[in-house]
Amino acid sequence: MRSPASTRVRTLWLAFAIAACSTAMLPCQAATITPDQVSAAADAVKHDPKLGGKHRERRLRWKADDVEEKKRETKPREETWVDGLALWLAESGRLLMWLLGAAAVAILLVCVRRWVLVRGGFRPGGRAVLPSHVRDLDIRPESLPDDIACAARALWLRGEHRASLSLLYRGALSRLVHHHAVPISAASTEGDCVALAGKMLPNESGTFFERLVNAWLLLVYGAQMPDEMLIMSLCDRFDAQLPAAAPAAAPAAGAAA
Image (cartoon, helix red, strand yellow):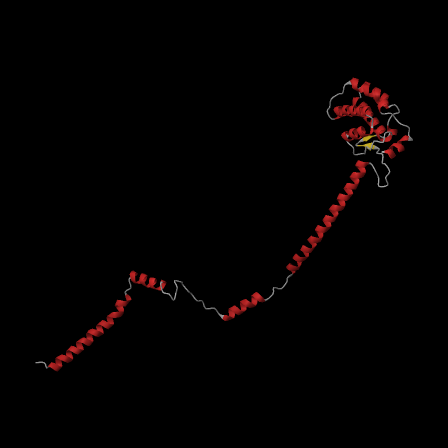
């Protein structure tokens, strides 16, 4: 028979063996993690007051790199020839704009002066400039016949209608400029001439000149033949309505204007 002491020793060894086996099995059991355990751990981290539900990361950087980057940021960039060229172009463009503006102002002043001289028919000295032509029509007295009305009538009867009306219109302009001091210039249009004559002539003479101009415009621009009775009437009344004054009266009339 076994003694009680031997039985007690055997029991102790069996307890140690069971404990050792249980201890060896613990890691295997701990290695098995379920999804519920992961969710529970995440919730625990999210509600941890020390973390505040925020994800924090830290990144290590070499101090030498930071120093080099700061040096590159604080070091001034050296100017190159491209920068110099850009600066030169900017300054040149500004100067060019000033020059162009000055040239435009000068051209405008010249054009205004020429327009005043041409439309006004005056020179800087105050002397009236009598035009030799109005548009392309020669109105010099020496270019016209002595009896303008008789010559125009003869041209019309020969069938030279345009030449006849042209002679009447040229003769009328010549007498308005040289004998009646009407300020007609080389650039004056037919409408300008009618308006200027209406201001300087008596009403009857102004109406006569307007009828002559309308007949001229009808033939030249409207390509329509004026009535022959009208042309004959214009020839008959030409000298009476637009008389040729004495040559000495022209300067006096010009001074009065």
